[in-house]
Length: 263
Image (cartoon, rainbow, N blue to C red):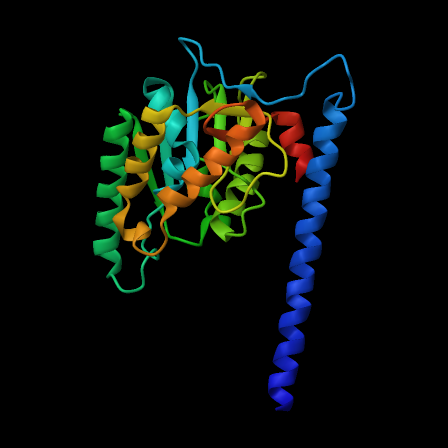
């Protein structure tokens, strides 16, 4: 009993620390957002705006795991397939403890290929970093070229998954060390955690909603555990309320300077 009591106290302490850290990050995010736009101005609307892509716009979507890109950015990928490059960072070997690693890696690569074929995206690849080791994989991550990219899409950094959070830290270091366009923008997308604020969106009409759901369902190795397609569709429908649309994908789009300052 004394040992159990100690473990319970320890668990409670860790939970409190996690809550404090998350609350601090959320407050800082809100502060940066509200400090950068005239939220209380009656003369200017701060409603989210649709993401606009020009003929030569280059979009880089970084997915910690294959399926993150479809869950968070499926509508974007299917709307602008020729503008998108998708890089899956991990090998996916730890996505199901009941499947041998080598089989699961091959399965998840096949699932990504099927999803990208539905979206019409031809430019996608794997870095092959082992799951849950992104924090220590900067050398391989730094092979990414961002010099000619206009927007980089990464998971919401408040997502409580070590690989999802690691992408923010890795990308910050990369942008400090490598050349990039002065107009580069960073866009957070939603997978496990919702954004406390968002300022950009991709409109999902009925056909696009249906396509996105099929794209997510390609990842059978993952959807057998969680019905991501249904749950994310519900989130997209809810997001649509704010902009008077049936459904939208929400994004928080930042300049590089604000991206540095948030975390």
